[in-house]
Amino acid sequence: MKILVINAGSSSLKYQLINMDNDEVIAKGNCERIGIDGRITHKTASGYSVTEDCSFPTHTEAFEKVIEKLTSGDGKVVDSVSEISAVGHRVVQGGDIFSKSVIATDEVIDQIEKLSPLAPLHNPAHVLALRACRKVVGDNVPMVAVFDTAFHQTMPSKAFMYGLPYEDYEKYSIRKYGFHGTSHRFVSADFAKRIGKPLDQLKMVTCHLGNGSSITAVDCGKSVDTTMGFTPLDGVIMGTRCGAIDASAVLYLMEKTGMNASEMSNYLNKKCGFFGITGGKSDNRDIEAGIAAGDERCALATNMLSYEIKKQIGAYAAAMGGLDAVVFTGGIGENAIGIRKLSCSDLEFLGIKLDEERNIALNHGEGRISTDDSKVEVWIVPTNEELLIAMDTQALVENQAL
Image (cartoon, rainbow, N blue to C red; front, side, top):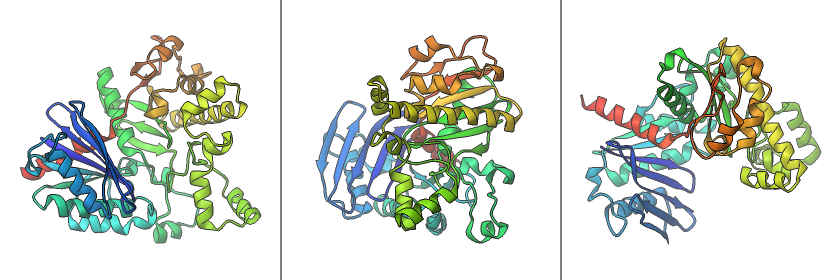
């Protein structure tokens, strides 16, 4: 079975075609600048690669180009659309309606659209992509929606509620939703397989660290708390997002600068975090270079993130009543020796003992980076959200066929 995985933004459409017989990515690419002019990058497992300018007035034209690249020319990997068994779509916000992945019927797409006020930058793009995909590939190719928020729907109300009047939750659906759910679900299950223990017997903290970062408490395979909240802005400091902040500080800043709500949202999401602390660096690789050159604010940004991760590990160990493992994943989690070291330092009282040599040796890789006698195992486990989307899609389509 071949599954096409789609991750659509307002002006982009990333794709992977995965052979589920061996989990191989047959082809992948990205349609950029949709609605502006257009560009596609298409790569195949055989090593073929091409980038070309295109006309993408809408997501429909982008999908048409994706299908063209997959089925014709030098980058061809299948003979026709009929070889694509299903399409799995990443959807950011499923609200408290969707607690698992679902077949994307017209009714489901309408529900995703109604949730757009909770994710105005993401859900409208997902709806455009879903409808464009159906228009291009036809009704005979089933589609599945896989939600970033679904994994966190197991959080208890004491974890997801805010201290606002209860009516605000009832009327406006204001609560913690959490994000990166596909990544946290993938690495927690993959870690359990790697150590040969049942997932439902493990307590772990999964750290998805990248330009956007979130930490999740996974108790017996279920998310019981996570750092991102009503939106992905909440939680630990990130590339350009501030993370958790006193709401009064935001109001005070609005008064002082005259920024309106839209301007403040842009400021908090795109001008803060690492970018704001360092004076322009949002990529951790640039920050590491800055630290090497003696930049104190780069060191501050790293220390801030590491300190927040450490606090969350301790807090979530308390929330779960124990801890078996800490798992690092994502661009920073898999590639930042210093942040992993600082995040796990002085946690011997909790049973965490990092092996510094393993931490260095396994950078950019995977495996255990705690000492053999560490009561809590610490691992690097690469995430693969696209594969999880494909796996969910395959399972739902096969179940539907029974």
